[in-house]
Length: 324
Image (cartoon, rainbow, N blue to C red; front, side, top):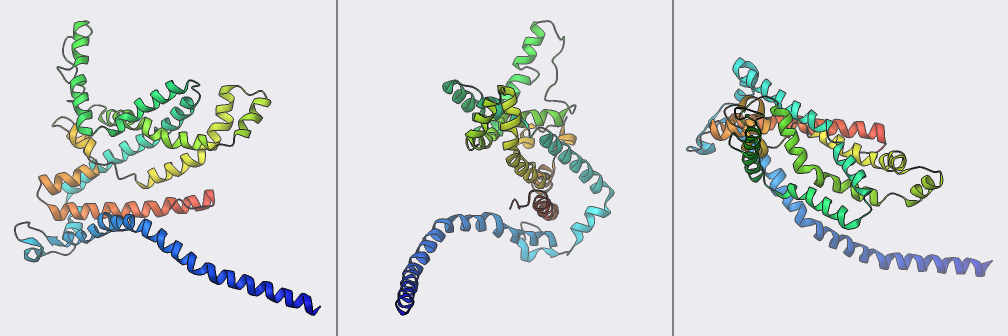
């Protein structure tokens, strides 16, 4: 009995000593990992959190020539103007309508990258599948300025499409594809799909690669065809990924970006193409009201954070885990 107790004590001491030896090594590893992520934390602070200091401009009647110290402090004047001025409220109402309409069209078509990835995965010829994936992902790396140049060369009044239609006798006058406010929400959505379809499918292709192959083998043994395998195996396995991306898109429903709408806007479609980000830019840079633009941008950021927290809570309740 005494021998067993002695051996037990020796083992405990050995484990304790090994643990003591491992603790410094663990600290060194943790410190090295921290050094790896430190540059990214610094960049996030520099470009995401430090600019929040600029919210102070919403409390001043800022004049660039006078600087912040020489500008008049007006408190919440710009926020009050947003809800007290009928003209301002009408403009913001139209801008929010444009923003939400385009965002909801984006949500409605968010299933397309998933469908494209599923069908692309069924292509057996590897070289052809890689070629299609490369060609469809390439537009993501083209700037919106170049996209507009392509659109202008094809769909302007003197573009290729109108030339073909007129030469074929289908129309007698050029069709105004770009210089019109009709269907501008749908047009912007289609251009976004063309630009981001292949790139958005990459994450689903990666998810497909991680699906347990035994599921496909079981489906094959049960006599399932290719379409049945896609519908009952591939798609259900991709739904968790799709739901996470969908929830993140809902959280960013007010963030349409500015570049696309800035290059496509003109005097004919300005009323219906002006989304919230473009409206803030136009007020601040064109209207020379940086304080008002800051106030609107501040409210948009706060609403976006509230939406993110809301969808995160929904994710916890529905999926049992958060997305952020």
